[in-house]
Amino acid sequence: METQTLIYLFVGASFALYIGIAIWSRAGSTQDFYVAGGGVNPVVNGMATAADWMSAASFLSMAGLIAFMGYDASVYLMGWTGGFVMLALLLAPYLRKFGQYTVPDFIGTRYYSKAARVVAVICLIFISFTYIAGQMRGVGIVFSQFLQVDITMGVIIGMGIVFVYAVMGGMKGITYTQVAQYCVLIFAYMVPAFFISMMLTGNPIPQIGLGSELNDGSGMYVLQKLDNVLVELGFNQYTAGSKSTIDMFCITMALMVGTAGLPHVIVRFFTVPKASDARKSAGWALIFIALLYTTAPAVGAFGMYNFINKTDGTEYAEAESWFTNWEGADLIAWQDKNGDGVMQYRSGDAFEGKPAFTGEDGPWGERLIANPPNPDAANEVYVDRDIMVLANPEIAGLPGWVVALMAAGGLAAALSTAAGLLLVISSSISHDLLKSTFAPEISPKTELLAARIAATAAIVIAGYLGIYPPGWVAQVVAFAFGLAASSLFPAIFMGIFSKSMNREGAIAGMVSGLLFTFAYIAYFKLLEPAANIPENWLFGISPEGIGAIGMLVNFAVAIAVAKMTRPVPPEIRMLVDLIRVPRGAGSAKNH
Image 1 (cartoon, rainbow, N blue to C red):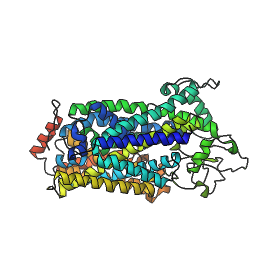
Image 2: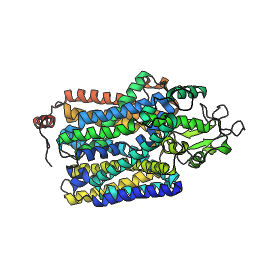
Image 3: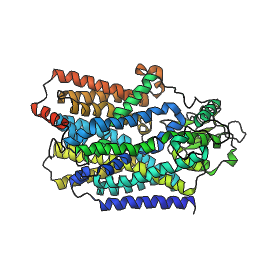
Image 4: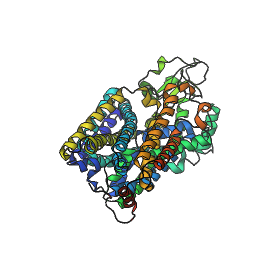
């Protein structure tokens, strides 16, 4: 059977499965819609959390980052994994014990303030829309490449699928759909890794294969060979870092605390019956996440090794079909600068402003050939790093069914996170703004209707951003984690562990941390991108890591303001004590 036919079958079957689960688990109440009835098994919730957590960024981008950045990309592995551990140990059990539906719900109640709730909603919506625009764009790209439709149609199809199981099913439908999506995405990620590890090293376990000798007769280890080859081509050593220690530390910290403050991940721990189950589901989620995260370094290294072997020194006329396929999607391109008809992959710009790999300025939908070549650089091949995972099976020459499986896995990763983000946006609008702030008299039925309308509107906006991505979506990937780190995380952390933090301090901290981080990233990413060099950074900290400093600003301002304003009411102090009680389960606050 042809590869394209297999892709249609695999993707169609997975979509039918998702829609069927959504219809079966349709939400019938606000509790079903917001927290899946609060009775999800910890193992099931752990798997759903892993799917929610492992977005297109984890599935598609992380191994691509590792492939092209080598050691420097370890900040993403350390930051995202460490952040989830921090969330699981420090926040999740206590938030579940508190017993509310959303993060703004916790902040509004803990800080006895509608203003604090509204500030939290603003932070949440900005973070979520920044995140989801990339997810929907990823859906469009995967569709355009594998299903032979344009990106716009791919986004529209993705919107339709998400609409069914997010709007109809709510958190209940999303939870069980994400279990299926996890199974699809992890199988799609691991199978090619097993194949390629076996082909290159003779060891089918990629984590072990990464540290094994290549079976090409060279007697060299995988990373040793990569180091040598990349240095010969003008790149840095694969295993050597180029970032400063302070920048590495701050980026890792920003990713960690930003992860622990991501609302669509936090809300997953509200769906289990009791606080002890939140800890169990976090443990299971770590196991499920570790399967992909421990495999990503091997996938990145194997992908880079195969990519170099299949491009550098290969005549363009004899290039394999995978190259021309991705070339048609504008995600790889070749410019014959010396007229010899041979592809030459080196360090430097293949086209004006288009290096050997791209960072945040990906060429979505852009015709690279329109950019003039850079005659001063020896490099002739431009490649977008996000194709490495999707193209890996094709580059390695794996069977068509593996390529089809990868297509289904890529879509599952993007759709699972998009659904979780959409639910967070809709619940914050219907529950936190309407029910809890501006229209407390509405009935549960009206609230559920408002949640579905909000989810529908959010899907439309997310789809629009996916079809017509404004510049900031591609340029400020640091926004989501930086803003979560500098705004929501300190308020949640102090709300649990500090009985003396009052509403004035929390609000001042969130606003100051948010404004500081936003201004710093906006300056270097939007206003003066040419100034985005280490010499101009504050303490040598890049925009990707400034969220760590924004977090400190938040803490400092919050503590200072709290000391100068009215103390926390006794009933709130008692509430914090009840959240922290280790024994028993249930909620500190009943609905």
